[in-house]
Image 1 (cartoon, rainbow, N blue to C red):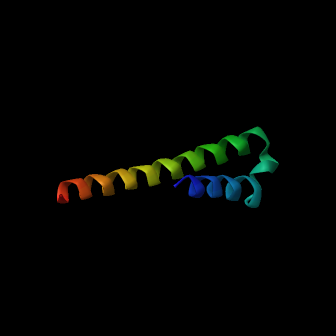
Image 2: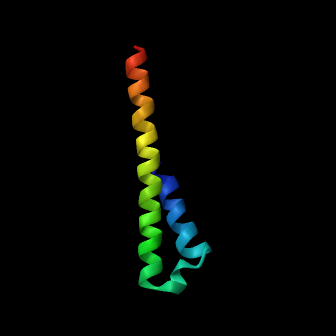
Length: 55
């Protein structure tokens, strides 16, 4: 989950050229990586609650 968020930041900031936009590129990459983290955290939470209900 954390690794995917870090990869998203690296991909957006370095590989897609976010560093060329300076501060705004950094902010966009940071928000994008946080969104990826939140998405996978929510998925993990849903899976845990489904397992709990199954027991």
